[in-house]
Image 1 (cartoon, chains in turn cyan, yellow):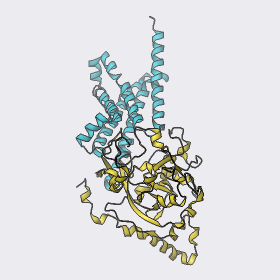
Image 2: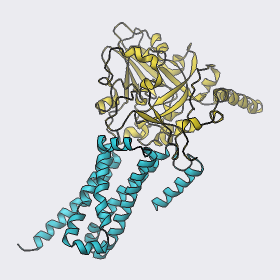
Image 3: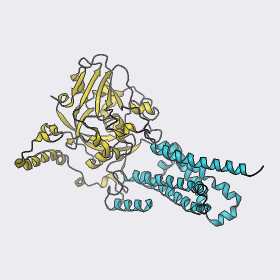
Image 4: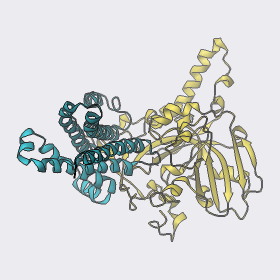
Length: 188
Length: 317
């Protein structure tokens, strides 16, 4: 949905500059893609806790779909940054990734998500077995890195990082509690 | 061709200065025409005082003007929120009439003065300036204003005065950003200049732009414009001017001293810790033509260099 709306905006921008995305369309496009990438990543992380709280294990089926959508937004976010903000200038991009901590941390989140997207199929899940679970725990540091990316680029107003940070803490907290309960239930 | 460079912009696309400068005259005449039968008194219009003043034409700048709609809808004015669109959406909640400015500190004649009284005997001039934001975007804006020095001289700074401190209106009831729980800013917003910087002929107080009174989101009714410094130095909606002997605090420097200095001169060789200052996106900017241009030292206002002779500008950023 957000992607469709954004596509309409980009199309309008193509027809009449300034009509779809406001006075600073490049920044707006990159920002919107990034914001939705983070939001959908948080939704992905909310799937398992929700299924536990509602006792609906079947909900977990949707986790892969959300995860792949989050990945798609984040990849588009990165491509949009490369294209409309950095203008595909390699020196600028390399300098940004190395010198600007918020870009370094955002880029590392993207790198961590690549193997997860690549091994998201049932086939890979079977082939990796137990190691698949281990590998996919990478989503936690990736989410923290994505949040840090937002936090470090915020300036003066901290409402968004606060809200997303609180959600992240909540989702992590639920996992700790769930794990603690499991450990108590199983003897030894 | 999809992506155009600055060279591709046809001269016909640039609004000639006399066109928009004459717009105010045009509007006045149009009003006079329509008002002929209705007998609408000019004084009934809010802020009509500007119409009764003549404005000295400014030196043209050989660069494309930023559109009035961009300059009035894309603003940093955290008193109304941190999004660029927040000021245009919420600044109408601020009342600016009446408006008084307090002048205090190291002056022979301190006092509170109404804005209109403050402007008595001061010629209004147009100044077409580049505005470079610390966030690496820039605009070209035709201001209406007058040199800061003209106001300061009225209050007679004493020999002790070495700095000028400015303060923005603090009125949380009308400025929703000041009510925000998530703002790290210690209100009111404050800024400062060295007295010799404030006295430089390029430093102005603006009361209008694009031939009209200053819109609220741009810092009505009176703001500072220091074109060789990053935009955050050009403090908006000023209620207090204080001459001091010691260097005053400025909000962003206070918040993040490593990122924002006191001087904040536009300088392509000193990067902001989080981004490069070597270039800037000049409005109008589009998705397919971002309009990146190299940033110039002192934003291209080389004549201010003499204010900083012998200073290490990478240290005093």
